[in-house]
Image (cartoon, rainbow, N blue to C red; front, side, top):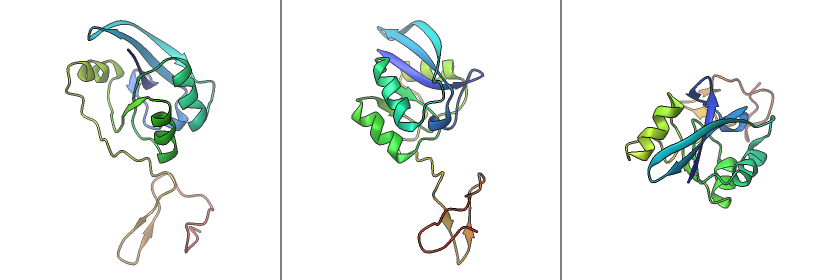
Length: 138
């Protein structure tokens, strides 16, 4: 089995589509045989799923991830464990012993907005100048 983790400075990187590196773990009989860091060469969401498929990855551990990327991973047969933070090595070890804390409904809402009591708030990344359906962000 091969596990990929979105990687930055030993930690689970929090935005799948912007990850510049994956840490890949070769697993056999519940043990890590080897690990290596692989560059994504700036690939986007769809290309990242294809890259993982071409690397024969079975499982992805990541932080946030959008709906399109989740679909691309599912189509590639890659099992997703999203909403994870902290050390990459610790996350893989936790997965191997069956106690990885993850969010099966993780959704990077990069273009989603919160609509409260008559109030519109954009997430911390800002929303640029795009139109959000019935209203403009700016």
